[in-house]
Structure formats: structure tokens, C-alpha cells
Amino acid sequence: MADGALDVVTFGCRLNAYESEQVRAQAVADGIADTVVFNTCAVTAEAVRQARQAIRKARRERPGARLVVTGCAAQIDPGAFAAMPEVDLVLGNAEKAEPGALASPARVQVGDIMQLRESPSRPVGGLTERARAYVEVQNGCDHRCTFCIIPFGRGNSRSIPAERVVDEVRSLARAGYVEVVLTGVDLTSWGAELAGEPTLGALVARILADVPELPRLRLSSIDAAEIDAELMACLAEQARLCPHLHLSLQSGDDLILKRMKRRHSSADALALIAAVRRARPDTAFGADLIAGFPTETDAAFENTLAFAESAGLAYPHVFPYSPRPGTPAARMPQVARDVVKDRAARLRAVGEAALIRHLQRQAGRRVEALVEREGRARAADFTEIAFDGEAPVGRLVAVRITGHDGRRAIGALA
Image (cartoon, rainbow, N blue to C red; front, side):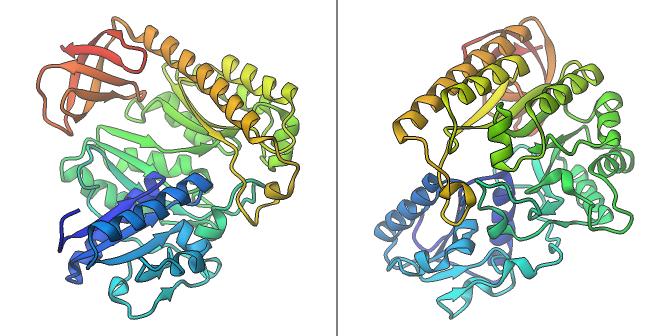
């Protein structure tokens, strides 16, 4: 962080990264300088701790800078950040990219996020120093999973109208981006409150039809309970839709899923994965899984281990359960922290073995991969590839995969 500069520090999800660019663009337009903005995450207690640590470090390194805290953690608990002597301003999620917001004379400017009925569309033209572009199509969530605090940071579900999404994707494609990722808090709920209740599948089909110059369209995390028929058809028929789905699964035990207030069973999830593989055999799956949810017994955890094995997940993302104040799960009987950590480690080991199996299947393939940085690229199914040779960031290149190192595939430009 350079003295006098504007810096935006992002924690958490892809949507936060997208919104950080909105904040940056508006700050530049407003002539903001010598300011550090922390766009926080509230998914876990660890994410909040890291944000607070970064704020204290920034104050030591830049004693004269204005420090602004925003994002989900600031929206949910503005008082905790306002009480930090290092912080000059706390902004809510609805306020953070508004004109003049970073110059507000108030100490705290956080509105009632639940009153929002639409998300403003502020195209950012891609993300700084990223090979791919992200487009927000939805924000907020109407569901109330018992472990999740995010609806209180994001508000209720709100969809960006299709025509605005298509216009932004088209603009990004014309600017040279070869891959666009659709992102949101609850992506598969897109369209539910719009006229005619269009589905995410309808939006994907329209983008692919109306923006033929875009080589790749990718989806961020989706809910396994809400994949519609048109989206399934797109997966089966549209090669430009990346064969990669990251599913919000959380557990492989049915009783735990009920206590989480999830809307699918383990059998539902396995059936969905099988159906997608029938439609698009080359699809690779990621998944969010929580280890040590309250009341999780040894048997319930074993069910999740068995589920992760049978699902054939390539990219499991394991979270040790973290109680979030104000959520129903925080009031349930807790699993001992050492047990939670042990289960998370065991579940990660299953994930590492699954990734190795996925990488082993890639040997000998010739794939088109998006160059993310020097010597690193990403296949359509999200396989990371370390490659020899030079290629510009943001371009698609042909790569022949020859092996793997346990974490990524290894190849060379074909």
C-alpha cells in the first residue's frame, strides 16, 4: 500500500471482488485519494478476524490515510468496526459504491439492507488484474439456512434484468474478455421476482444466443436445489457454457441437512450430479462442505465423507463450522473445536485425493485453457494447468496435458 494512494482490500467471494471494482471506479470518479477501503466478508469468524487484523496493520503502515470499512461484516455489525480507533468510516453494502460515499463526514453510514428491492447496475468493465470478467446478475438471498449470516449482510434476493446483464456481457466480450463469470449470492434464484419469473437457464441461453462473440460463459456457486430444465439443456447443448459447477451442498447427511434448513437431501444431490454427467460427461464439480456442524455425530460425519467419495467431487471447498452470532445454528449444541478441526482435516484429505483422481484423468488431453498469469492457465472444467511457454494473460491457448503435481495439471503449449 503506497502512501497517498487509493487501495481497496477485498475479502471473501467473487461478488465482493466485483463490487470492490465498483467501489474503486466510483472513488476514482470522486477524486478520492490516500484512502484504504476494506470490503469485508462475514461467512466465518475467521474472515472477520482477518479483516480486523488487516485494518490494524494498515493503520500502522499508513497513519495518515483514511480507513473505510464496508462489506458484509460491516453491514451486519457496524458498531464493532466503528469502535475500532483505526477506522474513520463504516459504510453499508448498499452505500459503498454510491457517489460521494467514501467522503461521507459520518462515522457510520449503514442503511437497512432488507429494504432494498433492486440492485443498481454499475458495470465495471472487468476486474483489475484478472484474466476473466465477472458480472453480477443477482444479490441477496431469501433462504434462511441455520448456519448462514449472509442474508443479513446482503438483504433479500434481487435480480438484475436480463437486458442489462446481456448488455454488460456484450460490452466485456467486445473489450476482449474471452471468459465471463455470472455471479451472485444465490445465483439460481435469478429472475424469481422479475416479470414472468424467468429462470437462470433462460438468462444463460439468452446470453449465449445474443453474445455469440463470447467464447466462454461460466457460472459461480449454485444451489443444488434449483437447477432448472433450461439450464440443464444449456449444459448439454452449449459448448461455450463451461462444464464446471460449484454446488452449495454443505453436508452429506440428511439429518444435518434438515438441521441446516437446506432444501435438498444427499440423494437429491447425487441424482443431480448424475443427471448433469449424463447431459455433459466432462463436467467437473466443486462443492462447499461444512465439517463439524452442531449436533453432527461421528456417523453423520462418516456419511459426509462417503458422500464426498461417491459424488466424485474434483474441487471440494471445506469449511470447519464457525458459529455466527444471531443464527439458529449458533444456539444448537456445538461440536468440540478439536473435533471440528479434525473432521475438517479428514474431509480435506478426501478432497485432495479426489483432486488427484481428477488430475490423473486429464493426462494426454489437449485442451483450450485461459491464461491467468505467467505459466498458469485454467481449462473450461476449471482444471488449473502449469505450462511451459509464453502466452498473454487473458488469452485462450491450446495446452497438451502431460501429468500433474498433485495440485494442478502440468502441460505444454500445443
